[in-house]
Length: 91
Image (cartoon, rainbow, N blue to C red; front, side, top):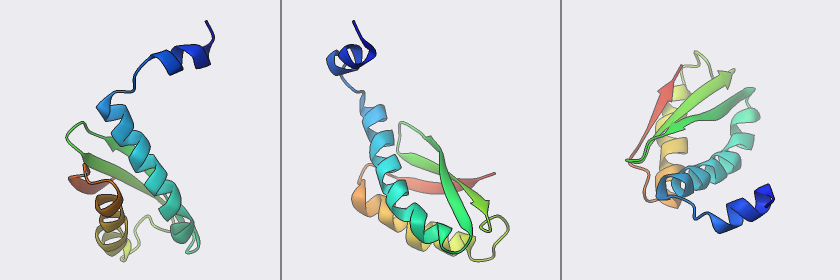
C-alpha cells in the first residue's frame, strides 16, 4: 500500500483538520507580512483552538507586531476558522 493509499483510507482527526485550516489562512496572510520584510510561521495549534504564531524577520521586535497579531492575524483566523479560540505570539 502506498503512502497516498494509506492517507486516503485514514480519516483526518478534528485536530488535524483544524491545523490544516489554520495553515491555509496563514498562507493567505503571509504575503502581506512579507511585503514589510517580515514573516510568520505557525508554531502550534492546540486541540482547544489556541493558535501560536512565530514572528520572523522584520517582525521580530517590531512595535507594530502586537497590532498585526491582534487586528490582522487573529481577526482573519477567527473569521475564517471559527474553531480558533485565541492567537498568541511565541518566540
